[in-house]
Amino acid sequence: MIFSLTRIKHEVKFFIFLLLFTLHFTLFTSPASAIVDPLSSPNNKFGIHIIGANADEASPAAALVNSSGGDWGYITVLIESKNRDQKAWQKFFDDLRRRHLIPIVRIATEPVSSPISGQAFWKLPYEGEEVAWADFLDSLVWPVKNRYVVIYNEPNHALEWGNKVDAVSYARVLDKTITALKSKNDDFFVLNAGLDASAPNKLPFYQDEVSFTAEMESAVPGIFNRLDGWVSHSYPNPNFAGSPDDYGKGTVWTWEWEREFLEGMGVKKLPIFITETGWKHAEGIKYDSRLPSVELVSRNFKEAFTKCWIDSAIVAVTPFLLTYQEEPFDRFSFKKHTGESQNEKILPAGRDILGVEYPDYYPMYQAIQSLPKVSGRPAQENKADLSRSLVYSTIVAGENYDMSLAFKNTGQSIWNEYDPLELRAIQGGETFNITPVRAAGKIEPGNEVTLNVRLKASEPGKQKLSLQLFAGSKPFDDKIYQYDIEAKSPVALQVFASLPWKKDFSGEYLLIIVSDVMSATAKVILDQNGISAPLEGKYLLPDYNFDFTLYKPFYKPKTVGLKLKPGENKLDFGTLEPDFLSALTNPKEFWRLILGD
Image 1 (cartoon, one colour):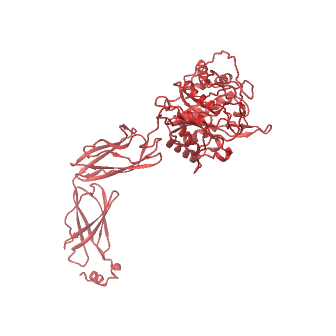
Image 2 (tube, one colour):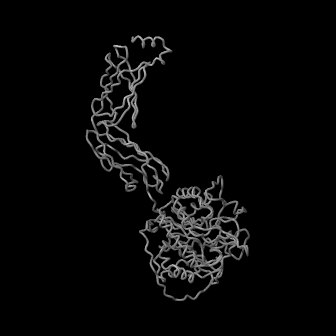
Image 3 (cartoon, one colour):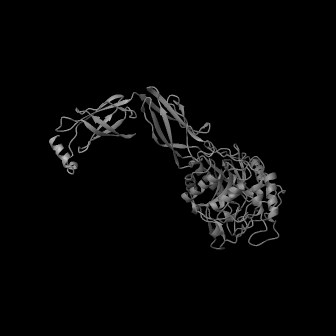
């Protein structure tokens, strides 16, 4: 299906006698890929094609494809070059992650009008645009590990490729785009543009799929072996109204005909993505009795999903189209005609739409919704960065301490969505009496969670502590956070101070304790010689630097710094200077300062 509003799809089934020819391939060898086989884990192949990158379409799409036991279905969505808005698309991708929708992104240029005929067509990519696409798409945090990207659309139609069919040009653009994406990130799962299998061979306006792919292979040998998957537009022609029982090229079985054709060319086996398929129906802006009823289309979809699209190689089927309220695609729309124009209903990517109630959908929506589905579990990148930590290298034996570690979700998964996220001690847990600490609530990518670990060492000594995040019973990632912690004997403080012009320094003083790891306040009683009894510093950490400030009313505070050691520590503040200015409002104290009374 083509997104140019002026495009008229060729609706005649063409029977083409295939020529047998031998093609020689130069197999492209790429670096080890980080993509994962989407069929190696539970996969929900049900999907839908949408136009608007917003919640107004994502919500009913999720209700459709994640129904009847299904989870993590697919959507195919278009990004035009003029809409490479990182913030808007990241917002949309975050919404897809919450709704468990896997995006298949089809990149596009932009439509322009012919200066001669006035007909709209899609521009050719500009020189180097593949780099712009790679930079933009790599800037997004994708919902799942595989980043599915379709490289343009039906280039065997002139209106889709600069108003002139050019297989050589498309092959070279595809080749450069694959290189640009893979060099940016190996998680890009690159897919070809779906081809129109029913197109006639009428150059320069149309080219049949067989000769078009042959020219691509000739221009860039091995181009199809560079792909990670194959996109098929398996429409039921002629007139998008064929029977689901029809077989072969130009039917809902087009994907299988293409697979056999590609294998005959020596192309490796590729997973199949049917990103466009579906029937025209009689409903729309104007009723057309010549087309199938929506009830018949519903039965056709059921038959196709249960008999045709059940092959184990098929990853996703995203019928065209969830909603379109104008010609020429109103007859493909699953959503009933609302009378609203498309440009009023479909808003730019990232817009919030509040208070929208979805009108009823045609029966094929409910028909697909009712089909049994698989609860998918696509691979997602679990990744955490330790953004802040407060971990003590020395502690006092026998005392409890709280260490805080703040982790930022820099991966794709939502923490605590499936298995609980815990921080566990994999070494030193028994020594320090540590129990696992569980994160509370769901933590989305970009957000942080702080975990507080309580520890206590029963005996003095130096021990290793290793911490690791776990999701359920499995390590969250391969990062291990290791610390050397020494438990030492308690710290004791003894304060020394004197006052000018006085022989008796006894009285109550205030001691302020400040360090990078803690702060505290303590009352200190000095005897007449200005010496305190030893003060037990339970939570004062040996081998840490502290600032100690001694206060007494009407005297200037005095600060000394000291690195504490186990056992007794002497804090000698010397002589505290009188603060005459503060005593001016209290004549009695003022004269006591002067007379030394």
